Structure formats: C-alpha cells, structure tokens
Length: 378
Image (cartoon, rainbow, N blue to C red; front, side, top):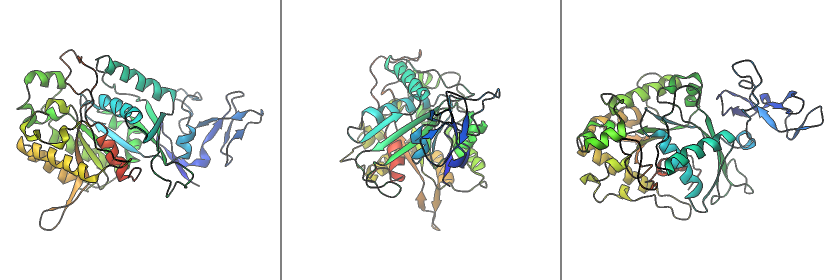
C-alpha cells in the first residue's frame, strides 16, 4: 500500500490508515480502498483525517485538520524553509507564494488547499502591500500552509500519465527560528528532500562594514545578536539537519540546498555587483524552461561578492557541509546554490514601514531551482 505523509503532523503511514469522518453523524471509518466513501447514515463522507492527529491535545476529535483530496492523491514535494529570527523568512515566503500564483503567466496554476492557508497568506500579503512588515513568527504551533501547483507546460511522464497535468502538493511551515526543536518540525525536516536556508546578508561582518549603520538597524533590529555570525548559523543548521536526519557528524548532505540571502536591496550597490546578472529583477523564462547556466552564474556572482567582502570563511563553512572534493582539493560536487532576493525591493525604515509599492527582486529563483532539481519544470 502506498505511504502517505500527513501535512499536519508529518507522521508517515499507509494510506489505508487514513480515517474518513462523517460530519453528519460523527462516525469514522477506515479507508475502504476507493473514494467516494458512503457512511452508514447514507451520507457521502468527504472529510479525511489523520489517524494520529485527528484527536487534539484535549482528547477531542479534531475536525479542522482535514486532509485535502489533492494532498492525498498527488505526490508531495517535501522541502523545508529554515532561517533564524529576523532573517526575513516570513516576508520571503509570502511574496514568493504570491509571485508563483500571479507572476508566472500561463506556466503554473497554483491554489491554496485549506482555509487556514488562504487566510494566512492573505493576511501577510495585505500587511506587506500596505507598507507594513508582518509580525515576527512566534514559537509554538505554526500553521501548515498546504498548496497545490500544476505545471501547465509540461507533459505527463513518470508518475503522471499523458492525460494528466503534472501536479504536486507542497507544505510550508513558517515556524520561528528556534522551532526546529519542536517534535512536529523535526518530523517535517526529517521528511524533506530539499532545503531553503534563509539568511540576512547583514549577519555577515563584511557586509555590515559596507552598509550604512541606519540600514543595519532597520534590517536586523537592536534585539538581534549579530555576534551569532553566518558561519555559526550554517554550522548550527548543518548540525541540526544531520541530527534530525540521523546522520553522523561530518556527513555531507547530498540534497539540494538553496542558500538565500534576503534583503538584497541593502547590498545591491556594492561594486562587485556593478554589471552582475543578479541585478536583473527576475529569472529569464523561455517557453516554460529555465536555464541551469543562469542559476550557476548567479551563484558565481554572489560567491565573488562574498570573497570581495572578506567572507571566504562563510563559503568554507558551506563547502564543509554541502560539497564534496576530489583528491586535489577541488570541488567535485556542490549541493548548494547561492541566491539573492528582496521581498520588498527596498529597506524598511526603523518603524518597520516601507514607502513604495512592493517591487520583489528574484524571489522565484530558489523555488524554481528546486523545482528544476525535482524535474517538475524543464
């Protein structure tokens, strides 16, 4: 029987274990092997519940965590978005999702799968459109954002027949920076096939030496400990991933890792970026295809900038965790790629406000890179 991962608690089990719950008479039944399911009261049952988290913490049946039909029937692309507090992760997720839905022409059809997903995205994007920064994510119980996406320009192959449009479900937990210690987040990370690591470039000492102090205060905030430099963050995240994945210390992680420098607007005018492709607002997309060469050029440009500002040790930390070398010490295989994005296109002031409309910069690059690695796009 096919295995299924619950998008709420991330427990993995056979699909036959999913419970069907009748909202009319409150009966539940196991999966009979096919849908639709009819209850003994003659009512069609359309509510699927996880057998693990269908009971909430108070022991009462939880009827809100319904498993959407598409999440149950289509492949799920499990990837984690990790970042420290004040890295701009919530802003990035919000704008990236909006761009996927509205700025990819006739390429993608994307829809939210739950009311909570729709409401959270609508709330955060509304705040950003009004020039306000959404409140920082609190520790505790992050809302799973469950999405369905179709690639309208790719023919069915592999899992998908010729009569079906390639479709994936993916779930995003926007937890606080410390929530990776939560049991549910641990299961979420353990099931992930790829990662987006979000970092504020101003956590890099070399970048802070170049940027105006006012921009640093507006970006990081006075409560952020800048002594926790990016090298420390990379090592901390790498150790966390190895521990959660059950791997020995020093093991190289051979899955795609998108290293995303947010708030690119704060450093874009550095001389190293004078004629760089990364200054262009968006990735070139031609007939639903993206070029691997452009991803590589963006990576090289950001790496060049990091060397220029004296951050070779940051590169070394990433290579130590996410790259393999040949006997001559040359990189044999690199599992990470650098990206630079800006959710607002400008730096918020000290009050957390921006004065102009949203003007996102290359926010789709990391997710499209992961989609290409997954062969969901050409």
